Structure formats: structure tokens, C-alpha cells
Length: 115
Image 1 (cartoon, rainbow, N blue to C red):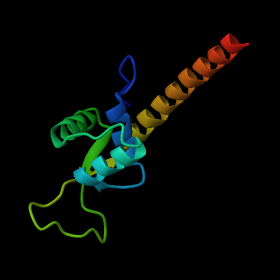
Image 2: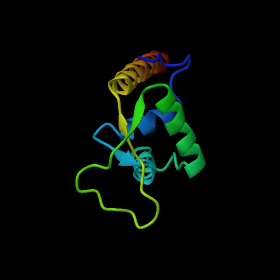
Image 3: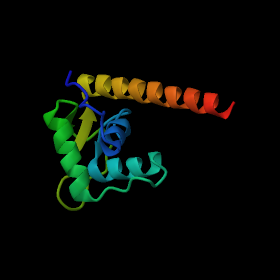
Image 4: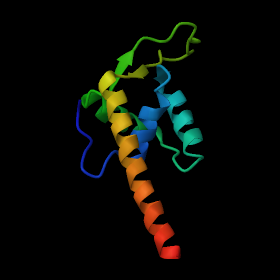
């Protein structure tokens, strides 16, 4: 497994991994999922999105794959689909645990300060 960089994944990296947890998606579907999951906070442009996908692929968290069964063909160039690897799933789980611990600590400290 590729270790999470100091400071963790970027928000976009995290949301890209999260977007493909349920199966392969093409870039535009990943972008739409990232936007929806982040409630519009993240709306990556194609260049930013594909740079993140390339980084995650180089790290072994994501691989390019065949279109899923039943995927509609694209009228232009064929779409490239991406899926999460076992290492990517472990990285996402580790980062989720790190974020949960950080938010729990922050909530505890904020609660103490209010008293």
C-alpha cells in the first residue's frame, strides 16, 4: 500500500477515491460524483481531475479498466474508466480513519471550551 502523504490526501483525491468505491466510472461521472458528494464545494475542471487521477494511478490506488457491462457507448472518443484497487481502498479507509480521529478530537476540544 502506498502511504498517505504527510497531511493526508487532498480533498479532491479523497473524493475521487470515494467516487469509485462502488465500481468503475469514467472521468465525467467521477467529476459529477465528486461535485454531488462534496455538496458543490468541489467542482473540478477536467485538467485538475485528470491530474489527480494520474497521481492516484501512479500511486497504485486507481487503475484504468474496461467499461462496465451495460455502459452506454460514447459518440466521440471511447471513454476511459477507472476503478479502485485494493491499495486504493485501504488508503481511503486509512484516510477516513485519520479524518474521523481529527474531527473527534476537534469536537471534544470545542465541547470542553464551551463548558
